[in-house]
Amino acid sequence: MEQYLALLRHILEKGKEKEDRTGVGTKSIFGYQMRFDLSKGFPLLTTKKVYLRGIIHELLWFLTGNTNIRYLVQNDVKIWNDWPYAVYKESKEYQGESMEQFIEKIKNDYHFAKQWGNLGPVYGKQWTAWEAGDGTTINQIKNVIEMIKKDPNSRRLIVSGWNVADIQSLVKGKISAPPLCHTMFQFYVQDNKLSCQLYQRSADVFLGVPFNIASYSLLTMMIAQVCDLQPGEFIHTFGDAHIYNNHAEQVKEQLQRQPKPLPKMRINAEVKDIFSFKFEDFTLEEYDPHPPIKAPIAV
Image (spheres, rainbow, N blue to C red):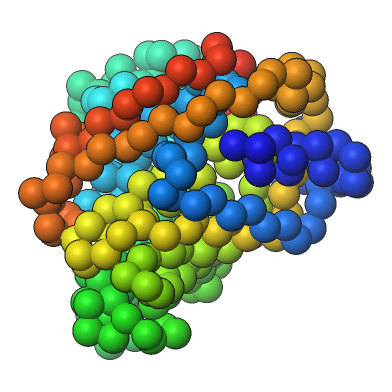
C-alpha cells in the first residue's frame, strides 16, 4: 500500500491550508490518482488495522438500497452514526441523550429508528433506486452488470451517485448526510479482466480513503465474479484530497510504519447474483496489520 502512503506524503509536502465545511480546517490538494492491481493482493491498509467487518456490512447495505443506519447499528457498524445524531441533537425531541443512548434507541426502537436513523438519498438509493423523471426507479447496479455481460466493450459502464435534484435537498438541510463524495464509478473490461475507476470529489485521506479503497476493490471483485471475469485494477481518482488538521499527528505516526504484505480476499464462488452476497461469503486471509490509530471524524 505504498501508493496510499505516497498520497499522505504528497499532501503533507504539497498541500495548501484550506478551510472547509466542518470548520476543522485541512491541508488539501486537487487532483490525484492511485492504481491497485487486484491480482497482487487485496488492498487493505497494513500500516494501521482497518475495520473490514464494517466495510463489508456497509457495502452489502448499499446494495440493498437501504438508507437507514439501523441495519449497520444492529451489526455494530458505527461509521454513519455521527450525522443522524448531530441532526437529532438539534431537534426539539433531544433530551440530552449521549451518542451511546441514541444508538441504543436506533437499535431497539423501530419507530425511533425510522424517524431519526434515515440518512436520506445516499449511496444505496442512488445505486439501486435512482428516481427517473417518469416516476419509475432505476437500479444502476443491476443495469451495469447486464451491460458488462452483453456489451463488455461499452464505454457507458457507469454508476452515478451525483443526483442533482437530491443534492438540492441536502443543501436545504432536509436530510442529515452530506452530498455523496463518491460521485461516479466506471467499469472497463479487457483481457477477461474487470477494472473499476472511482471519481471521489472529496476525500478524508486518513480516515475515509482506506475504507473507500477496500470497499470499491471488493465491489469490483464481486461484480467480476458474477460476470465470469477476473478482477483487474481498482483506480482511485480524487478531486479535493485532504488531511484534516486534527489528523496531522496520526498521519505522521502512520508514515513511520513499514507496510506489510497485502492480505488475500476469498469470496464464495457459488454466489452469482450481486444482491445475494452475505457477510459470511467473504474471508480475509493473511492480514497482519500494525495496530489501529484513532482519530476524530469531522461532521
